[in-house]
Image (cartoon, rainbow, N blue to C red; front, side):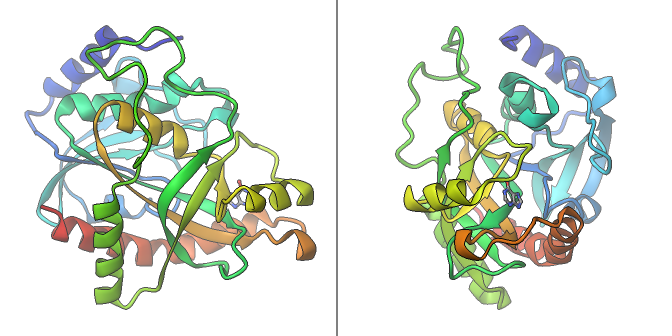
Length: 274
Ligand code: HPA
């Protein structure tokens, strides 16, 4: 299903009926940023269930709510509730909130995820600023007729993650004394974790971290002309020659433990953004 300009407009109208806010920064509260919702000085909270064409969250703990307010004094729209391809959503559905955030006026997108670390220098609990990505989902949210009013048919991908924002994030991390890795994120659909042969392959093609999200949203953000800043929380070590069974409970625990660090970093980044 291709989500059209009319559907974006319908969702925006429903939001406009509740708020006149003009958010400049969109934040997807994925893994690692969930608690950021509590730091937002919220004016308006709207359940996804009250927004036309918004997907419904199926994952427990993902509230499924759009929050308009201020964070670090900046006008933000926070999307609390992220959608994954492996849940059965199309990539158009997964990325619809990004379209709506853009239509509300956002010019910058901040995203985060939980990822497996494949760079041997990385350890579980590390934070990484995403410098580039590899799309191995075998799908693309822009497939289908292109609406030229939303973005170009063939969006350029030479700098999907703003180099200036990567620099700004590194500066912010330095100021806060938070160690920050940098690297390439590769996205697969999941829901399986990867085999040892796959980790070896993903490392070989230049990826530092692997996960099941973010890339679709970033593709749509670039198509729509948004600047992007992305972070991964390294939740487990995916070294093919020393691989142990993935412990999902431990992965979630590691992600939760890193949240305050990432929330502080994103808040400082917002303070520093012009
Ligand atoms: N693969 C491996 N480890 C992970 C992933 C993944 O997709 N996400 C979080 N840790």
